[in-house]
Length: 27
Image 1 (cartoon, rainbow, N blue to C red):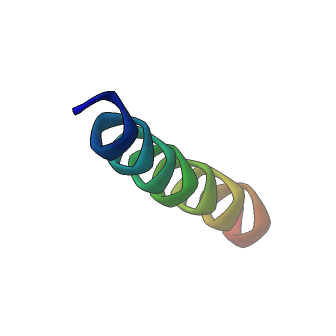
Image 2: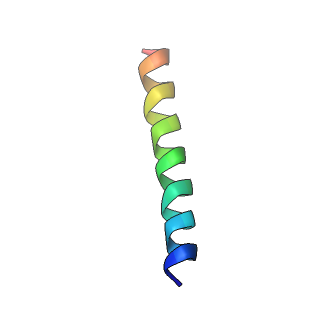
């Protein structure tokens, strides 16, 4: 339900943030 959706969204956001931070660091 909502809880599962929230967890999925949090995980997706965490991965996206990690990719963005990684790209910024590598530049």
